[in-house]
Image (cartoon, rainbow, N blue to C red; front, side, top):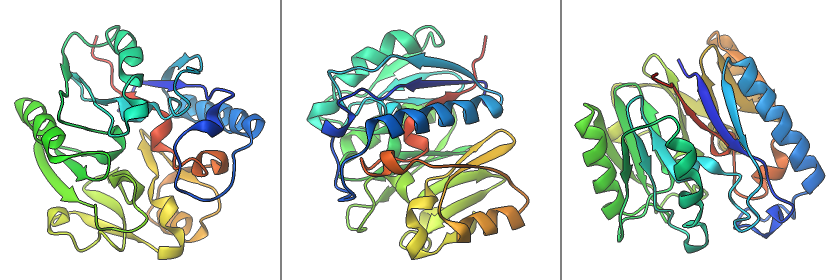
Amino acid sequence: MFTQAIVRKPGNNFANGLTTAGLGEPDYTTALKQHEEYCRALQRCGLSLVILDPDLDFPDSTFVEDTAVLTSHSAILTHPGAPSRVGEVAAIRPVLAQFYSQIYIIAEPGTIDGGDICEAGDDYFIGISGRTNTHGAGQLARFLELEGFRVHSIDIRAVPGILHLKSGLAYLGNHRLVVVNALADRPELNGFEIVHVSPIENYAANCVRINDFVLIAAGFPGLKSELEKAGYSLLVLNVSEFQKMDGGLSCLSLRFKYMR
């Protein structure tokens, strides 16, 4: 059960961030409305929110998930793979220090983006990508193994259309994963039940299980139907403006259980 989430509002220079999507420039007013709807959905899932002001020094900083990996016992500060985003980590550290006494740091030459890290119960999957390298993955694995987690690395650098591991993989609980076809036969996923995503709906694979709900992007009826048949209660959200900037539902928050 998650109890908390940290989010950051997009700034008015949001469109100046990094993107490879080729979907056009996001509309800032629409992005703000979509972000507000996202926050309301998190609250409906039972989470208390820390809502941070926009950080105009870092146009991508609304994608707060990339700055840290959070367990029940520790916060691991990342070192983003894009140089323009490295400064986002210093801004998130004092926020996390309000909740965590144990804070680890990924050090150079390691790089980690939080979007490459998927928690799946007692397992963690680390995507080796254009943003997360083997040095960073090794450091993160050691921190996670100290807490008793099993860690598996999945190299996605040759997978087209996948910026981060969680662009194509999501954990639904009960040993079940949503997975795009390009990753579905990876041996690291053996033992998990797979919910397949049609290639035309790959973006929808970035869904998020939060307590009694699954957040899913609007406009993907195939996966929506599959998850409804499996008995999940869905919250369908329009995140079109964030999709234009290579972002998805998981990217917009850091979710965790606060252990008082």
